[in-house]
Amino acid sequence: MLSDASRRGFAALALTAGIVMGAGKASASELVFWSMWNETEPQAAVLAKVMANYTAAHPETTFKVVWNGRQNQTKLRAALQAGTAVDFMDQDSDQLAGGMQKEGLGYDLTADLDADTKAAFLPGVLDLYADGGKYFQIPYVYNTVNFWYNKDMLKEAGGAVPATFDDLLALCGVVQKTGKHALVIEGNVAFYNVLYFAHHLERAKGSGAVVKAFEDKSGAGWSDPAVLAAAKASRSLWDSGCIAEDARGFQYPAGQQTIALGDTLGELVGSWLPTELAESAGKDFPWGAFNFPSVKDGVGKVTDIEVGLLSFMVLKDAPHAKEAVDFVKFAMSEESQKIAVEVGGVGVTRKGVAWPAVLSDAYASASAATALSPFGGGLGVAYPEFTSQVLNPEFNKMFLGETTPEQFVETLVAKTKEFWASKK
Image (cartoon, rainbow, N blue to C red; front, side, top):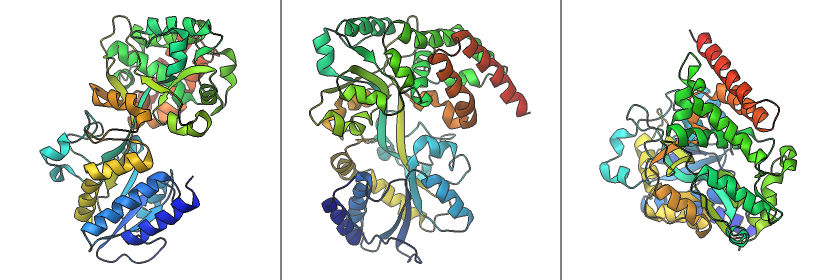
């Protein structure tokens, strides 16, 4: 939450930018922006400052902003159906790809992105959600998925960053000797826990392996031995003592708090973790991050990463589409992206703009990425219903010991076959 002083600063920025809160008819030079941020969040202050800078350079353009919070896409879809005119919006990139972009509501940005503009993005970012070579969203905030850990604890335990999955299991034993545990999970957050399965399968078969397995409409894609191996490897984290038994009952955010308290080395999660734990861990907490390690005989690279991006989308029927595109490109400039880092404390998508020091390992991971896939292997983007109703809950049941890895695979095979049969 922002302080009162920060809110006053935001109000001043809003006034400077010509931001109008609430209802009212848009003037010809007024861009209407619906945002996923709440008005009091740091990212709202970032966007207000960037808009103020744009208006200073383009006095004919002002902004009317609706701060909707995380349900922005849902609220905007309803508003558009009611005839509300909106120029551009922002949201989690995967939600956009599976939502408004899939529904054809995005403006085609392809012709507006020249070679220099496209080259300014970190590897793979712009292309991740491209559709048939066309671009409908511009990612501007970048989260990586890594093992986030306490560097001092690793050093004190005499351990090292693992290069292979077997090294990870060995590290668990090293940390256990200190009376602590290497990893923690949130028992009730299945879409976090499934990251172990998705990463192991992608290390074995390559980036995109989760979606590829599901798109075998016979269900046989899940019969690949690498799928069962990934499920068994996930369960082995419990058998190897990597995770404390009581973590099975943790309800978010109880698990991650054990890292802040120094009871656990780390967690496989997004790069938002240091921000979420900033207050409880303290500003001097020695954060480090490393990518999911390689697996035996796997073809996937350790530099292939899963990401969570946030994007701008100009709407297909925007009253001022060209002006909105120009602003979005301005928001991707080096100056604007530095504001996001300094004020918002987040990773960004432009090359050469260093992330906050606490995220330096994540920035190195993003800069060296050889392939990107969305959170959890990307199945939730194209097939959100199957992911939320089958993959995630069935994995969590297996992961927490309620079913076996073999039963998990059998369920995926059967449910996938049923899913595709219902589409005929």
